[in-house]
Image (cartoon, rainbow, N blue to C red; front, side, top):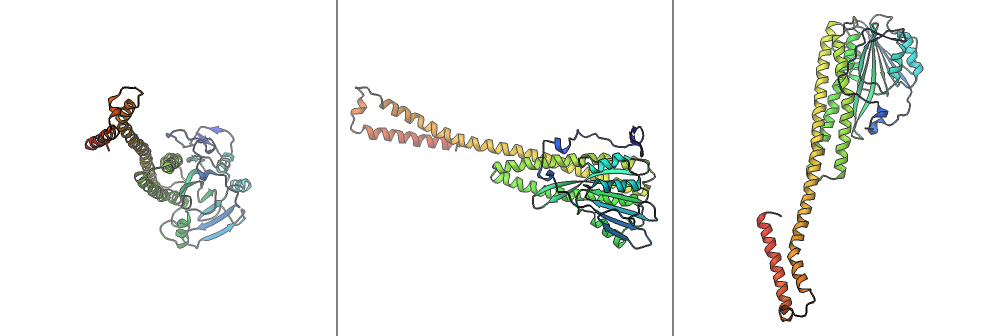
Length: 370
């Protein structure tokens, strides 16, 4: 299916989005509500404009609204417009009017619950992906939606909050390192995609450290806080998988699509991004298996500890069974019981009971029951 630019109807064509993963609920419908999904305060919109080519210095502008100097697709070279904060829909509509974005695209950009996908609108490609970062203070994953518009000689990126992982790309543009300033807008879009996917490995490394620490706690002294940490980490991995899994099909669609906006040289680099995405998904699946195994280990550990307690209580109860029998026999109110008249009867009963206790303890010890 394809969404034709300038039309409000859905028509058959070249929309390329495939989903072989399980159905993904919206955040508001998901049972897992991590702390990172709390409602954020609206932030002022910041527009960062970069225009470059291989022969002239980079032109950079920054403002809180779209200005006349921020020209898109009407000058030589490549233009990158990076928009931080998408709470002001009027600015999105202004950008959409300049590059003739379909109304549904603007709606998807403004809706932060979209899943990763790629759509071909002939004049431009629309890509949604999730930018993942690690919150060191809260020790958790934070996920932000990023939208990319790839045109003939421009790229527009939309993000939820200021601050991102695109600074290395900006540095390469300013310093003219690598081939980025020699290539077109498709290579810039690839660079942004590659930066997002490579950052997944950094986040997964931090998650791996959390799993290692949790394993140590699980072995030393598991308690209720350990169980809560396991469930929290399991929820993080499930939510991370839902955010990353569809990206595989989106990038795979970019490789297979026949669009003049993507050159053959860039397609080679997109295959590398696809391979990295597969590695990320495999790592997430491995971590999920590890956390599930940790949950089983925790339950087994708690069960074993309860068995140890029950074993001690059973041994104590077993020792007191013959003692209770002896005390019960000589506690009966019969008139004629010969042992009651013995002068040493009291001490003899104590000796018998102590001997029974010692004998049973030695027997249990020899059997290795404690």
